Image 1 (cartoon, rainbow, N blue to C red):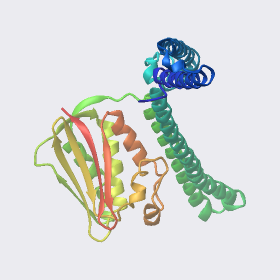
Image 2: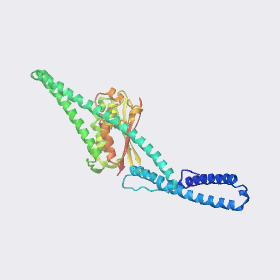
Image 3: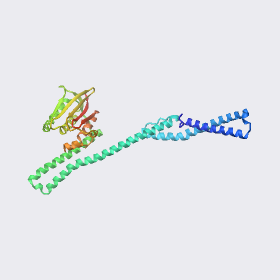
Image 4: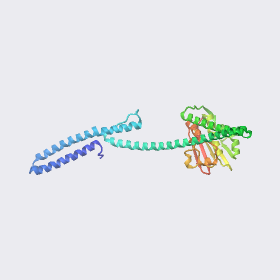
Length: 352
């Protein structure tokens, strides 16, 4: 029996009051009226008075509990429920017998939900601090370079033909890097906000991959990376924005070259039929990614410690753009890696 329910609480209190009355009646009758228990009328009076007292106290207790106490609980429940589901959805009131149990469950669930929200806010706060620090670092590098080159030219280097042209070229490169960072950030913002419209067409993902590998061929040869495409010798038609998917392939394959094994480097591109989708996987045998970094490789400006050690180039925006492009197609991208073994990036596209 759950004694926090109105009916049971009223019943318990009425039994206590009635029992106390019976004991008091019996003691009083025995002390005051000698031989009272030998008369039948005594028991009749006790039965009637006890029954009336029980009914009256039960009614009073239950009315009080339901009218005053549980009305307050309903208000609490209504407030909790309205905050959880929003103002548009009306709360479904439970019967008073189950109200406290339901409110307890609501409070417990609400507490867990708020704890999760607090943890999420902490993670977002940390992400914001990291993002501000990273973007500050990425912007300061070209800006400081530009400042240094211009200062050198103004301090007399402009009149020196062996210095001025070289420093102007370096300034131009730093400006180009700064412009690319801003363009990439603008592209990510457009993808996140849905402002960038995809031009969905039907195209051969194998042919597009070959175009990208041909474009990166010289860079792959420079780093002694061999790129192979396992396509089964036939076209594979998919649906998507061809230019954006070209960008996805370029960024991932370029990373496999940049962070690949520069002694016996291999980058393998494979296609898998996944019923309604085509899975494209790009696998390298490079330095790999630490487990704690895997969850963050798609964050803006995030570069792993091994990545920074391997090369100073890269803005940490390529994979963030890749993720947003793939998700804009309502598809998924994933990564798996092992240190010293290599990394595999895989993304899906709808089969055409």
